[in-house]
Image (cartoon, rainbow, N blue to C red):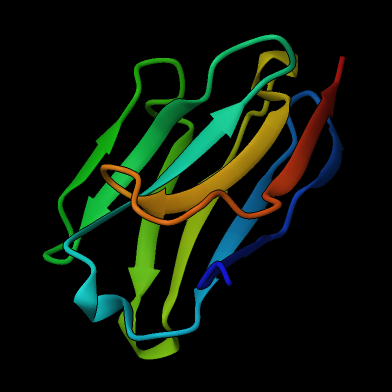
Length: 114
């Protein structure tokens, strides 16, 4: 059983916003580094953003300044706040450790229409 469950995706127009959630079935304090990955149709999965237990963050250049990753340790939840979404952000978004540790879950679909 995958201990991470993603939600929050949906269909939005270009320029819109979404907040993705990743809920863990165990304390995320155990996880030194977590991240959000995405896989667009016909493309390889890529790491979009990551955050350490200490709060240090990293972003891929294509989303920098449009996306914020943060975690609520008390709620065992990691979030990805996305703004100014573009059609090229369309993908299935997954959360996992960095580097990947758990099997991939179902993810959450983000579709951005032009």
